[in-house]
Amino acid sequence: MVGTALVSRVVPPKSDELGDTASAGCSVAVEVYGGVFEQGVGQEDYEASDLLYQSGAYSEYVDEHFAGMGTPTTLGRLQDLLQLYELPVCFLWSALCTRLEQ
Image (tube, rainbow, N blue to C red):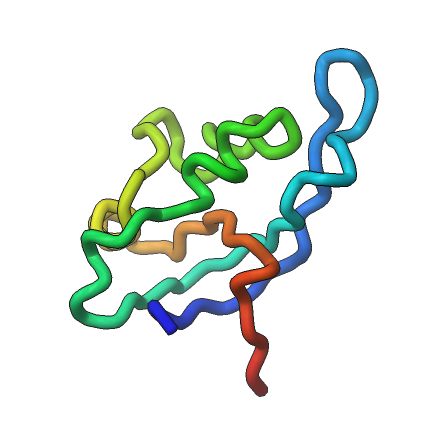
């Protein structure tokens, strides 16, 4: 486990420019907020940076989530970005790498 966050919703892939939805092979994403990462994971890759935000299915969420600051590439950079704002910042996470607890 690399950290905890609150799951807001399952994020639907946005349509690509051809009007088709993203391919069935793309990863399903959840939108999370309030992320807190475990100590020592700051250098780990923020895999959604490549796998989700750079895909046609989810690329339109970059500006919505990071407001022109660029997509963080490591969990440490993501944590730094989360600490810049008073309100919780939403970001994508692969649903396959999520464990829900109540």
